[in-house]
Image 1 (cartoon, helix red, strand yellow):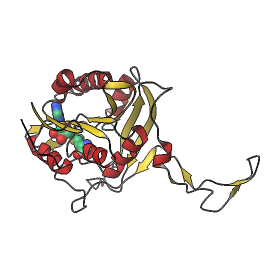
Image 2 (cartoon, protein in one colour):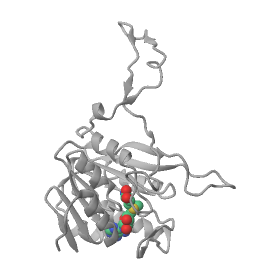
Image 3 (cartoon, protein in one colour):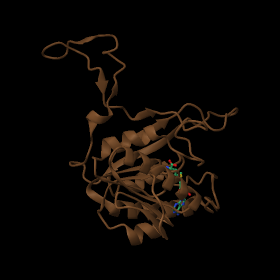
Image 4 (tube, helix red, strand yellow):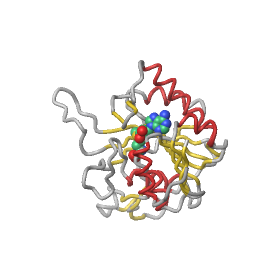
Length: 258
Ligand SMILES: C[S@@+](CC[C@H](N)C(=O)[O-])C[C@H]1O[C@@H](n2cnc3c(N)ncnc32)[C@H](O)[C@@H]1O
């Protein structure tokens, strides 16, 4: 296991389950973002992410999910991405341990493969869960989007005691449109499943405060850590591929030590 960075932004190179077990104290993290290999055949450098059965894959997922929940502080939030095929199982597993606050759909412009004989996939599901349903961070004011209904048509809401113009801003619903990261976009890194900064920006702004600790247990191209740094949060990132750790070091502007 190699570790890089500072107390503000730490990168740990190694296996997620081993590092969660040995190196992250319980109840020490404010926000956890998890974007695991989906077991749908994507190749990640030297480690091919494939399990021999659905059961084997889910058993592996349940192991890191259980550990991640332990690391969350009493008012923390956890965001979990997964393939549409597996999310129902992970949802059932997680709802026994945390309160699911939202089931989010990340919708994007076009699928990697142009389907001709079926409906191409244009979304990925995200679960947002909290440890304490009565006390968790949600910075609604920091993530408002334009309201496309009444305000645009300059309508007045006559249901109110004093008729008032419709709000022009609102908290986003649970279908989020963000384009996928493509080659030549300024944020592009050489990673097969890089997530957009805009997606992580909404999550981190909504569910953490400046100075909070954000943990990403499958860092990939280190989008979570890069956005956490821009937003004044601390970060801990786990990734076992050294090539991707190099991307993280570059994105976070940190030098390495063993
Ligand atoms: C879906 S990608 C994450 C992408 C990331 N969210 C981003 O925006 O770039 C999953 C990552 O987990 C890493 N990974 C897979 N199994 C791992 C393990 N057991 N321990 C640590 N990292 C692992 C892979 O190398 C891959 O980079």
